[in-house]
Amino acid sequence: MAEIHLEQLAHSYAPDAPERVYALQPLDLTWQDGETYALLGPSGCGKTTMLNIISGLIRPSEGRVLFDGRDVTGEDTRRRNIAQVFQVPVIYRSMTVAQNLAFPLVCRGLPRARIRQRVGEIAELLGLSTFLKRPARELTADQKQLISLGRGLVREDVSAILLDEPLTVIDPQMKFELRKKLKQINEAAGVTMVLVTHDQNEAMTFARTVIVMNHGRIVQSGEPQELFECPATEYVGTFIGSPAMNFLATVPREGRREVPDLGLGLSVPKGEDARSGTWTLGFRPEHVFAEGDGWPLRGRIRRIWFEGVEQVLEVEAGETVFRAKLDHARVRTGESVELRIAPERLALYRDGQRVGAGYD
Ligand SMILES: Nc1ncnc2c1ncn2[C@@H]1O[C@H](COP(=O)(O)OP(=O)(O)O)[C@@H](O)[C@H]1O
Ligand SMILES: [Mg+2]
Picture (cartoon, rainbow, N blue to C red):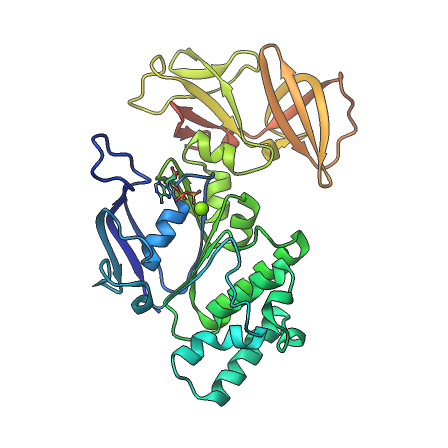
């Protein structure tokens, strides 16, 4: 196992083109040994490119890949001891499930008894024990993905397990189980895991550190709660959370930015000019309450819908529309409401970047 460091790394698939297009913009990133990470971002943002650079399938056009300080940029995949699981299951169709799982260990010449024991453990963990003697091709798509995963997990010498949207083909209940299993494996074996996903729930429930990407850049990296509570950009606030964070248009007023329809605002931080740039006031629908202390938010309910057991209200106040997520509120569409928000839950964003919050 190893600490993985990406140093001044960038990648262009056509580095010699007159106008270089980067799939990955220059970045520095350290993956701590034994941690769980999620790479979260929309399709095309560079997640697979980053993963393939770590595993050695792609050689970066700029920068270096270091494992425990050792430069492996030019080393091929096999020498890196990385296990990679892809979106589409990769299995040896002519082999049984047991032979598939054993394959990486057979290649490394482990004693047969040890192989059998290890295959047994992994099959048990993944719920494949009863299928061990079956030809792998006869299994369902999600079982095949479990085999792929099992082949990654079976080795005890892996530096990291990289999972590239491996749960796409797996049904929701199984996904939940599998995420739990992956976490257990991480805790038991202490192996670094990187899960690539475009699904915020998957990222937030799996990883200790979530790295949000967009257009080949890392937008923010942090613990799930940090990303939820303090999105560094409007993009993160919108991408994480359901419904998305509210970002309301504001106007300048005596060193403050205010949402005129709500009379709600914050002072801009020292050194900032309240009159230049585009400023929004951000707050989470989850931080709005039906009663209690806080600033009043008055408006009319435009729409109500449910997300799980919670209600989402879409409220309009003049030109302004915001959303509130409430446990239980006896309200109807068309009604006027007065909701509340604690000032420390508000944050200012200038040109999409967080610049200050209500508790500063
Ligand atoms: N083999 C390739 N050749 C040229 N461009 C590629 C290749 N693979 C990916 N790209 C481009 O690089 C960018 C990042 O792709 P990718 O890393 O696959 O994103 P993601 O996994 O986040 O969907 C995209 O614009 C994609 O079109
Ligand atoms: Mg991808």
